Length: 489
Ligand code: BES
Ligand code: MN
Ligand code: ZN
Image 1: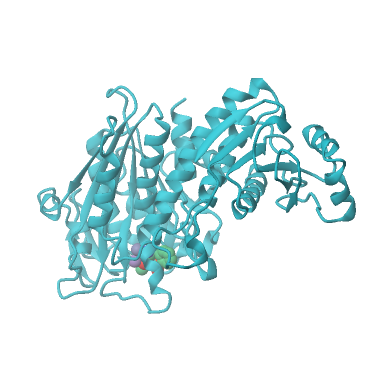
Image 2: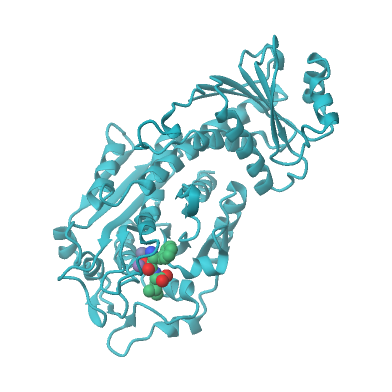
């Protein structure tokens, strides 16, 4: 997909679709377009065919005009970034349903910030183009999408360079989301720890700034990652720890470390989950997939920062070697853990990855995990849970969430919650009882993240959707990229 920006005469740009954001009252470029179309737009509004309400779309066919169709995109009531993003996504979806190869997006009538708006347009076009790569033959989904070029039309020449920057950034974010979605949607018999490691290695191939290395179980044993290994013990496929490094600036600049949970299938282990909906536990690697997606976006967009990605990848299965409730294991940090529930496995793999992260002398560590069902109870499928030992970092992530439309909300890490994971037989238990499950999980992680600024995103509710539209969302790639972009200055 090619993205370009132009401030040329709107009707002189050759395209077969023109996306026109407008409310019921036409302004500026919309008015000019209406005039050149003999009032076709205003008469559709008058007739009630197009309401102009945020996200409403109407495809108008224009015989003989330079655009073969004009897609009206409603903007009325799209005041917040979230509403504007939703509207742009509706426009992108409408465009991708048409057989256009070349489209012009009118960058007027919605948001004022050209860079931001162009980034959301490019991102939305990329994500609307995603198709599950192994879709059944002959299904509607296998029809190739035709769109090849999108020209973002900026109202003034002064907006052009900002728009171009936004397009490049947004396109990278959208592609990163699609990479994460594809990995998430793949079934667990294909997307194994080894598969993820192979993908991460392939990504680094030929990239000067990017390397991938993979720790095997033997390496983990040497590093005394007893907690991670206690999860992989019950599975017949070996665990891998994927370590990716992106060096976009001087080596002396401390890296931001992203740690992503990648349980490629979470059966619960001996604390087996109920059968209903268990297939969705193939998505329990979405934290790791989002880190791989971010690295894909970094390669595309070449941000001048240093980032390390650590993806502990394993299955959680109940074979004869599996960890049993009550077993006590020793983590890489030396702290001991009583495994009261083998289904609370995410924290068991993350704690060793967090200890390992310390080796990179990080500026900041952010872990991403589909960690608790409880976060869905608290925030639904809308918002990620955010917990942090640093107020400034938490604020930066919250605003990155708002700007990218990939929002998070902070929960507290008060001492009283930490007391809930006390154990009589080890330094801590791996569960804290029925209350505040998202917080006690984060309190557990916080015990391994004391040496640096740390934040935790619980994306159990936001990483995928269930039901008829079941599929991975590509979240939280947007909030992570927005945060990294803000760090790049
Ligand atoms: N991967 C799950 C969390 C999860 C559950 C994500 C449902 C999305 C939907 C995690 O490993 C888990 O099983 N957590 C347990 C923790 C409990 C045993 C303390 C949970 O949330 O039930
Ligand atoms: Mn589990
Ligand atoms: Zn899990």
